[in-house]
Length: 112
Length: 112
Image (cartoon, rainbow over all chains, first blue to last red; front, top):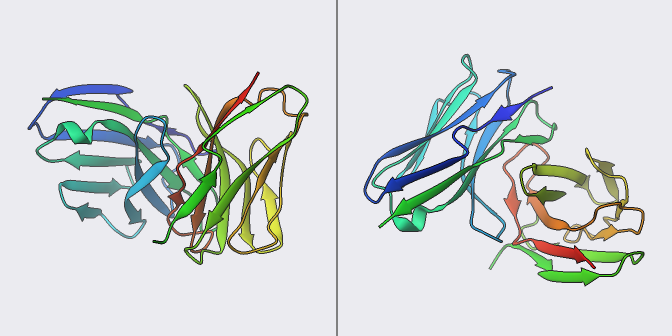
């Protein structure tokens, strides 16, 4: 059974720092991996989707990488801003048609 | 604008009552999902539907029911058989069962 872990559970950084959020998964035979952002009391917003054949995806200040062999994905946030404060979740799909397995999330606070 | 609309945003219910949460999407997505989110437990899949008139149980379907009579609608009924219904409920959709998910804003149910 796929297990997805996100460490640390919480992170606080000063504004302007570049930072990396980690996501690890136990079964490397994945179909795709998706990163989400969740603000308090809100739904999830999709940030990036990486297919198993891809190594990375970029959107603005965000860059997500995927290393299937080591069972890891990272979300890199450049020049962090207070508006980036939220919980970031990763989710893994093992096969086409299988459901997503979510990690527990990393709660990020960017201080002005 | 295209998106997923959940209603109501907040709902209070007395014990023993059934309640129905609405989820409507105008993205023309085939697949729709219901998740439950509890503090410290991450997202758990309740039900999903790959196509109209079809739906499957997720990991925690007991005490819940769904229908998929129209492509754009996937209502969730929380029945009195659900032992601990107080939670944040999230609806999502995707183009197919294998593509990235898009979420609504969520419905918070509180049982008094």
